Structure formats: C-alpha cells, structure tokens
Image 1 (tube, rainbow, N blue to C red):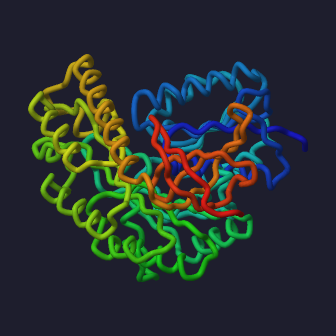
Image 2 (image 1 turned 90 degrees about the vertical axis):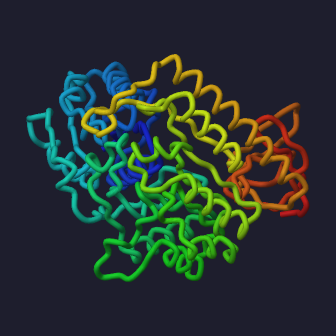
Image 3 (image 1 turned 180 degrees about the horizontal axis):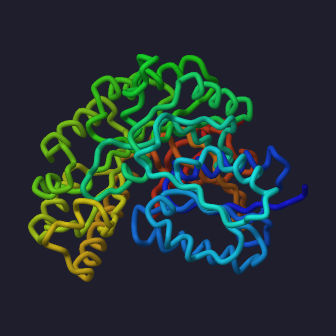
Length: 442
C-alpha cells in the first residue's frame, strides 16, 4: 500500500488516547505515519470544541492539511464535528470523511470500506445523546512513547453550566475491567513503566457497569496487584469522587503517583452555584485538608475559570484568596469561553475581556509562586522520576522527567534511558524545574 497518514490532536488527553488508537489501526493495516507538517495521503484531525480557541485551532489544522496536499484525503472527527458540523464541512474543499464521536471507534473500517467507492465526500453523524455503551475497536493507543495512556471511561452526567461536553460525548459509560487489564498487560510487555488512567469524568468509573461491581479505587488496587506496571497516575478527577476509600489508597499504595488534579473552577460559592458544580468552598477545603493529612507530600493541582458571568471583583478576590490558602501545587487558569447551547451563555453579568485578561494574569502569577513553594517544600527529598527527555547542555549529557508528585527534575547523566525510572535526591530549585542528584547506579 505504502500510503502515508498524518495525525493532529487538539484538546484533552482522552482525545490524545483516541488519536493513538486510530494511529494503531492505520499502522496495523499497512499505512506508514508522517509528521503533520509533511505531505501525506491521509490527514486525520481529532478536533475539540471546549473553547473558541480549540475550535479555531481545529479549523486551522484542517486548512493546513488541505494546503499540504490538495489532492489528499482529510478525515475530521471529535467534539468539533459534534458541535459545528456545518463549519467543519465548509473548511474542506478536497476529499473528506467527517465522523462524529458516535463513529470514532470505527473510523478505519468505514474509511477503508468506502475507499473503493467513487464518492469521496462522506459524513457519518449522530448526536451525542445516541452514544450508549463503551465501544472497543480491537486496537490499543500508541499516543505516548514514555507513559502509557489508558482510557477507562467516557462521557459525563454532570452538566456544569459552562460545559457542552455531555452533549458532545454523551452520558457516562465505563470500560469493562477485563479490557483495561488486557491493554495494561500489553503496555507492560512493551516496557512501559507508568500508565495514566483517563476519562472524561474519571471518578464515575464503574457506576454504569451492570455486570461488574467495581469502582475506581477497586480498579486501581486490582491493577496494582496483577500488573507489572510500576507507576499508576490519574488524570483529572472531580471532587465528589474523591472518597475516603480513594484517599486511603493514595496513603497505602506504593505504585499510585502522589498527584491529584481536582478542578475547583471558582473559589466563590455564588459562582460555584451558577456553574452547577454541586459543592461549596467549605466542602472543597475539607477534602483537600483530608488528602494532605493522609499524604503530606502529594501534589494537588487544579483548574480555575476566570471571568464567568457574574464574577465581580469581590468574587474574583475570594477565588484568589481561596486558592492561595489551599496552596495548590499548580493552577491551570482558563479565561471563560462562551459556548452556545449551554446554560452559562444565558446568564447576565458578562465580564469585559480586558478584565478577564488582568485576572488571568494575576492568577497565573500566583500559580508560579505556589509552584515555587511546592518545589522548596520538596528539596532534600528522595524520589523517583520517569525519564522523559535526554539532552546536551554545556557539553554535558542531562536527563529530565517527572517525579511521582509532579515535579519536573533535571540532572546530569549519561546512562539513563527514556522510559526508565531512577531514584534521586531533589537538590536545588529553579524557575520551572528542580535540579536532582543521582543517588544510585543503574
């Protein structure tokens, strides 16, 4: 066949996983991969619609693919298709296949079977509310060469007022545990040392499985007992799913990475209520304190939306002081992005763009201060890193990687390989990383 396929992912880690899954399907069926900057026969864009910027980038990548090879075939899938089918269609003037999320797991088969037909402009679309059940396609993801990404859940039932994901990905649905174990065993055989468990609403794992009595904590414990994986990392998890059982698992586990990303979104109770977040700041603070008491060196990171409708100066200041008090290891700050068809778009009290920019800058500055404080707190500790990068600086070999508690560490080294886990001592902090000192040979 000798045809080339190039991939571009916009958006979340679940999208990254799904792109890796698609990549594997094409490779196993005779395609070779190309960089998205190169000329290819097929370009696949896995789009996003969480923000206006994500939509813009998705359409930009479609136009880029058309310029790189005007006679090539463009495949577009993902939440951008689900939210804006007509706009996506209008971006493409060459041969195209457009797939909504309903068809994502079956893209290769549909594309391959349709490639023998004369019609080269095909759309396969169903609304998100028709997505039921977790669909396997027989391929595993190869989206990350250092840590294995493992999707265990999709969809969401939360319906936060600013979010359209439940409308685009459907209701929550969990993957059968036996399929998860099979994928993790495959990653172990391919020498992966760390996995990341992924989901749109990760903590809800197992709630919908009628034939299995299992939750997220029990899944983690089973992975720890039965697999050769050395580190298990969780992606984002919502506060209602941070249970005593899960916190105890972090306290006792030798494999569970000491990092929890728990989205806050606002530190003001009035705004949280408008967001339909189903908790208040008192409940949030109580759980954060419980976690830190049980796992003192854990990194707790968070998301905050700035400029949500109704956020005045006092609301923002309460958010600022609240995140400062909780001393997060890092804050991911997101300027509010208006999404059509969600409840927040109907709210009064829109915040001026200049005000949003100023508040975003202020919170980002605070995030840097809190990150520095977390680095200082960990200086002198002995931890492990998963080697992700090798480089040369001042004629000296060095490596970089993340500790289990989410600290980027770099140190001089000429032997450690990518994907290897090594022990070291955290020695000195800099702006964006900590310098490490090797304490054992490999």
